[in-house]
Amino acid sequence: MTTQQRRDQIQIIEFEGFAALEQLLLIQDEREQSQQIRDMQAFDEERQQEFNRIHNWDQRRLLDYQENRNTLVDEPNDDDQQQITSNRYA
Image (cartoon, rainbow, N blue to C red; front, side, top):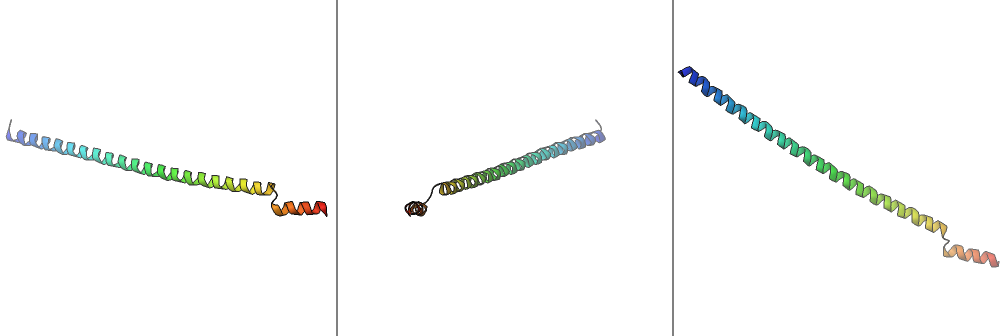
């Protein structure tokens, strides 16, 4: 092997090493991006679950309010009972 061939061979090996390093860096970047995406998805999912919990809680409060309001409308109070009784005997 001539001196030029040895230099060429060394340069090829160096280029292959650089290519391998670059490939490793790309793989590392892809993994980091994938992790960031998973983190963002987990955060979004947590926010959605919290929104759903609050929404469900609000809906339960609204239903409770409506049921209590309907109960109050359906059931006469003491004043109404006294007025009905007074009107009967008047």
